[in-house]
Structures are given as C-alpha cells and as structure tokens.
Length: 291
Image 1 (cartoon, rainbow, N blue to C red):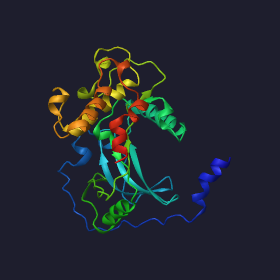
Image 2: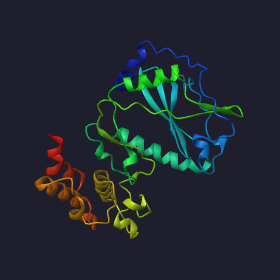
Image 3: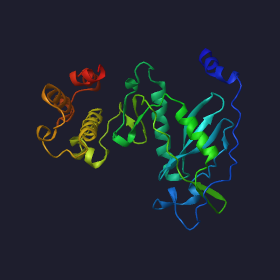
Image 4: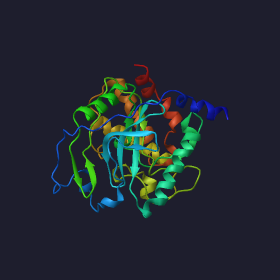
C-alpha cells in the first residue's frame, strides 16, 4: 500500500502540457522510395503500429520522435507527462508468431524489476546475446533529450505518407558531454538461469564452446561473451590470433594484467571461467575503476 502511494506521488503534481508538433516545414520523401522499416526483407506495413509524432499513448506518453527501427519493432523517444521525464517506447509489430517471444521477454523484465535493487545480478537470468550493440551508456544530462525535442519542433524529420500512414526517418540523439555507466540492454534472447538449457544461442563469433558442442550450458556462457566483447572493443578484430601476439597498445604490467583478465573469461571449460563476482575483484578492473 505504502509503495503504491509513494509511486503515485509524482502524479499529484501538475502534468506536463502536451506539445504541438504541427510544423509542416519538413522534407517530403517520394512514395516510391523505400525508407526505414520498409527496407527490411518481408516488410508488411499492416504489422507496424502507425505511430505519429505528437501522439499521446495511454493518456500519458507523448511521442517526440523516432530513434530507430527493426524487423520486430520501432523505437521512439517520448515524454512521460505524469512523471516529467523522457522515456523510450519500443512498439512491437503485430504478429501471432511473436506472441510467445514477447511474453518471455516481459517475464524477464519483470524478474529483473523484482530482483533486489542493491544487486540486480541476483535475478538469475542468462542474457545469451552480449555484444557491443546491446551495451548502452546511461545519459544523466536531460538536455540531450530536450535538444532532440526542440529539433523536432523546429526542424521536423523527413517523412513519407503512404496509404494513410506516415513513415518517419530516425533522428540521432546528440552525444552527451559525459557518458553514464554502461548498461546491458535488449533481453529479447535472455532465459531463466534456474532452468536447464542446451538450445542454440549467441552470435556465431561469440559462441561459447559448450554451445557449439551442443552440451548443457549455464551462466558461464555470458562470461565467455563478455571476454570476446572486451577483446573486440579493445582491438576491433577477431579472436583467432594468440592474445600475446596481438595486444600492442598496452605495455609492461598493465598489459599482463589485461591479458590475465581476458584469460579468466576465455577458458574452454565453463567451470574454469571466473564468475562475475570474481571478475569484479580482478586487479585490472579495480585499477581502471580507481583511475
């Protein structure tokens, strides 16, 4: 009861007033030109919700602009008028084949939400798809979003209108002056860690040995992924050359510490890989955190 009351407190204040996105000074893209989600193989217009900039969803979220698109959804920046904040809306396509997938993803997010706030790592979830594209940085500076909003109001994004629906082009957020902490995102492929698994997972280049061998796997597949991602982010190349021969930007003890960290993750045998807790205490990680 108390929790529900506290969560409702922001609503007791004055709501944000809806903005007027009626500026008609935008580029009109020819209807014959395929853009955005139209370029995806197998695209069917009727599967995508015809989101409109300025539209208010659930009497709370006003759509500000388009951030991106994919085969299964479109992503939008919106104003949460009740809580005076900016949020991201991921609007999935209408497809019976995606029903179970969406249910599973929502269950994952619910478990994360219900996990102890001091330690989300206790939610017992295996991500299975850790890669650079799924790691985002937090943004503490709201001016990034207000700038996006003002740009859309003053210089509306190019768009095309076809058969009564509008397809908008995506607009990028301005790079903030200071990036927040990295955040693991997109749990669409995640699974419950307290269940047995042996199904095929992970991108080909990041696939753990036990997955390739089609034997049961668990949390350590994510550790393998992290090792691959760290190495790729650091070097920008594949993993087929011995570490010692390829790492050239670090020197001396710092290089040895970094290589020891990567070796703790890229072990062929899952039980020999370090856990997330152990990696947090690694000397190289601690040294970087305290710089």
